[in-house]
Structure formats: C-alpha cells, structure tokens
Image (cartoon, rainbow, N blue to C red; front, side, top):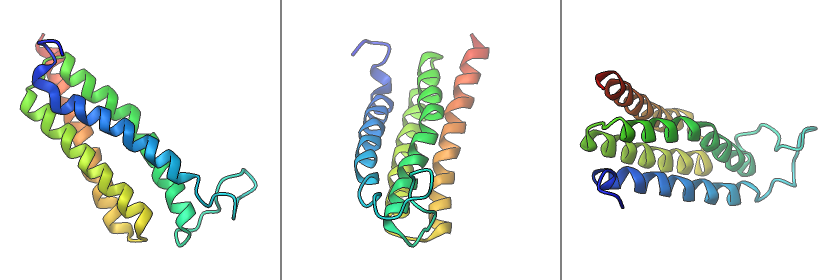
Length: 137
C-alpha cells in the first residue's frame, strides 16, 4: 500500500468488504425468484415473501454503491482526516450489513429505514469531507 493510502486502510477495507457483500447479496437474491414473477421477470412486490426481500436487499445495495464509492474515494483523494473518513466508511459498512440482514430476515420497516438512514448519513459525511478538502486546496 502506498504511503498516501496507508492512513485510510479502514476505508479501503470497507470498500473491499462492500464489494464482497454485494456479491453475496447477488447470489442470495436469486434464490426463489423463479416462483412468483411479475410480467417484467422480477419477483412480485410482496414483503412477506423472502425471495422479494432478498431481491430488494440486493437492489438497494446496488443503488447505494456509486455514491458510497465516489464519496469514499473522493474523501481519501482530497486528504480528508483519516479518522473521520475511516469511521464513516466503517459505519457505512456496518449499517449496510445491518440493512441487508433486516431487509432479508424481517418485515420490520422502521428498522430497515433506520439502518438505511445511518448509511445514507455516512455517505453525506464522506461527501462533505471531500468537498471541504477540494475547496481547501
């Protein structure tokens, strides 16, 4: 690892683990999809159906990926404080693991929303750190 990125080891690990989590979700999202499909080939919207919840957990992870990766990389490249960048990237990963677990394992909407919101706030924090670094240069 280059000297520049060494202080961001936790953020780099969070990015790698995020990629692995998405691959895992991609695999579990296919289980049971063939049973009940809509005209578009996707599972029918039914949160009581575990296949639908697995599908949505994967789709939700994909939807947040671009923002997380962009904000985390930008925060590192603009020299954001490693403590905060690492903390927010790690919290994002933990929040998203919790979101996937809640999404797949339960129908508890408020808990899914709470974990999603925590991850969302972490991405906003990373983006603000990146902006601060960009404008300070």
